[in-house]
Image (cartoon, rainbow over all chains, first blue to last red; front, side, top):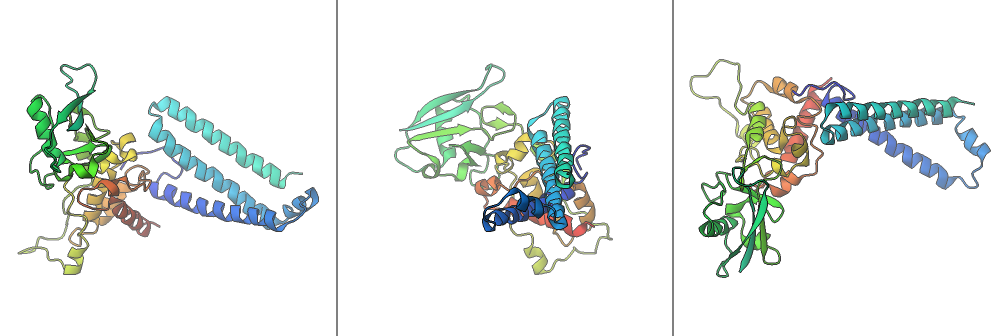
Length: 115
Length: 234
């Protein structure tokens, strides 16, 4: 057993499962949003805004944002442990990634539920 | 004439490794790479490599031939030579002791870590622990590994984390004991593997499968280990 403190879910299995689950969510959301663009002609602001007024669209979008954050965190953590061997530099890289992803999540909430 | 370029490094004399070329007359025969190495050694007897059984059983002459890992003794020239040139390097990712001889300590350490022997806490029977033919069949494709290290040293995940990732060879053996009906420590074995490195550093690129000289499939075994971990989890 290799001890880890910085990975997402403490266990390799939960990270692996979460990465697969988030990938499925992102695939479904991609199909959904591309499908919306293809089936909606002359899309304007009013339509776009009304579309995102629907609670289920907001929930699905927010789930996708969380999925991106989790998926990216697990992936970037893996890459950093592969290629960045000095512990200090790796921790800084991981902290920057975490901060960026956290910012995206909060920003996403603001966009979805803000004015 | 075959041009053979071999990796040379003697840490007692050389400041850095270098490639040395030899012209070898194969007399038109489709020799095995190991035979060619003997001809190289006839020209320069300071050239060092490991070999023993010369028939693909002992696993000592694993090396990188024109970019692909394999056993020199069972690889014919016709399989690897392109453009009349053969480039021989040691197995990638392991420290070089001299020329083609690599230090396999980390590889063996990972093998030792998975406890490659039967663990059974029930009282020993008078004769032997019996297995049904179907239970024995599950070990096929697993027990044949000869620990030549061709797979693990072709795996980027093992290159970057040889101290943490068990590697394809070790994981194939881990599954060989996880699936053995005579072993009673399945849960303990799985608990040892449930971290982000030991098993899950495998990204499924299947380099191990493409180089295994025994035609084994470590990626499939790793998939089975993941399934077992998932089934045992809550």
